[in-house]
Length: 198
Image 1 (cartoon, rainbow, N blue to C red):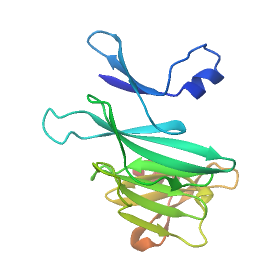
Image 2: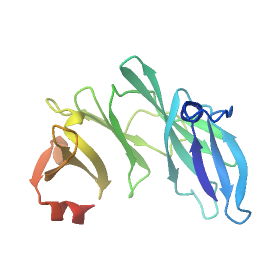
Image 3: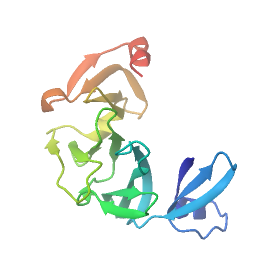
Image 4: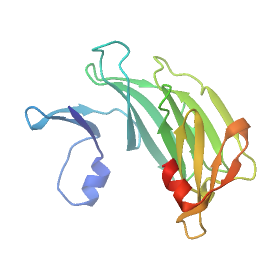
């Protein structure tokens, strides 16, 4: 099965005449067609979905859906755990104030979401498999830093790596940073190093 996140706002802007609600659309590879729509009860615009490993062998498929609710220049990020077979929705945490920019990713080594956002540079670690709403596992700020200084970021081995951006918002291959010890450490790199790290 393949799962697709459907956003009616994006679809409407393309003038397709579609009137579906926010949902996850299921494509069955054996039947070669879309077989199901799972309606999403999440506030704001759907942004990303992150699949989680089943709790048991043959267990149910679960995904975290992130949605963004804008209020002028500011935005709140909502994180919802969706159990696909039962269509149950569980709010993971209170909405996060993410300002105008954010990065979000799922760790490869643990069921945790990592969220970085403005204003300034804020880090959250959130349990992605919580059965009840919880406070973030960890939260900290890096004073004097801005998320807009970075082109992109990724998590590897439990560390968050940030890729520098030039002033014109393109990739700066000369530096890479990580958040070890709650500080941003810079590493001088070459384009070859950068490609090898990707």
